[in-house]
Length: 124
Image (tube, rainbow, N blue to C red):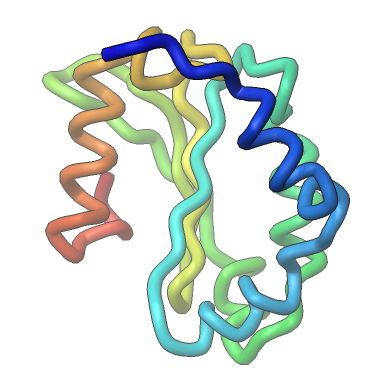
């Protein structure tokens, strides 16, 4: 494949970078499960920032999500991280991973993505 500069993409999307997707997420949560995941060591998209965003969402399942318990998530008897979820919203903290979870923990990322796409996001 030939090299393509990211400049065209940036130029076309730069106005979208500072636009909030919060209203879209709130509407989608009424109909579809959504999973947010972060690497524990991610400095670009830090887990506490994601949690603050999720807590600020307003939708019919907010209380169920907020009152759910954080649970250990294991893959092949290894602690892969922690997850929490309720009424279509799930958050996952992937242990020992940075911004590129799929590179840092490929097996755990595959397990997580497979559970989401198979319709069981409440059991990564």
